[in-house]
Image 1 (tube, rainbow, N blue to C red):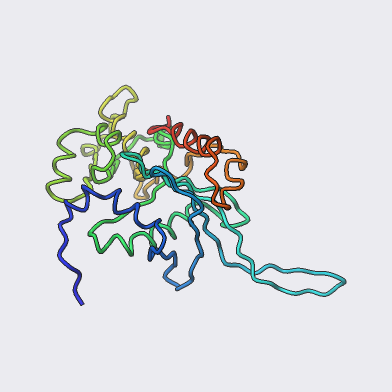
Image 2: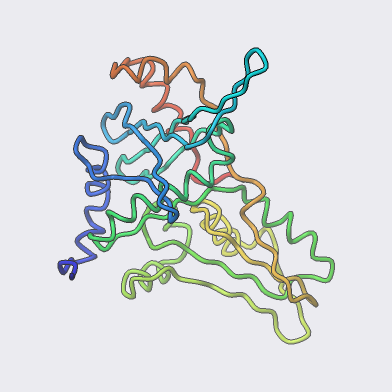
Length: 272
């Protein structure tokens, strides 16, 4: 079996329109892991590019009454907000430990499900968590002898507000080669890198990586082990649970929907 020939540039140009179809009634979207376990989901509501979903986990719940125990199937769920408006592309995952131990697990489940459909369009989605810029400098401060090497990986030019942080050259190279550019800063022999907070180019690279959730790798001078930047300061924002009430009934309540959109609009590109 062969996939039909698809122009990836044409797919990229219409990526959000293609992605938006997966939330329509009759969509073949399925969330499952490599172990074949399927996670139920439902589209609660959607309007003008904003989608509210719920994803359920599969577990067993133990009960006890009058000294008798029994086990029942339990499917706790959490909410996911997908902002597929023009040039937005943000996914907010509710942090509800009763359903999933962490939001990164949900992100991986969703990523695998979306990519099974997107591959036919020669597209791919990566769901990576935003983190704070200061994490870079926090880790750099722990390198007592200085830093020998730093590796940056930038996403394929996708969102203007992130692409604009790095140079025009990166954008052109990425588009012409269909790649995610990588920059490696390596200190000269027996030297260490000069990393300064007032270096605008370096700061732009850190911001672009943190805004897109791309991990930065740092190797302290005199060590072989790399330090990973982007896992300790994952961004979170608060939204009242009241905003989701009655949405399951299919009611598009203006003030509740306004609260959800307002929540999405206050999500910043860069968190310092």
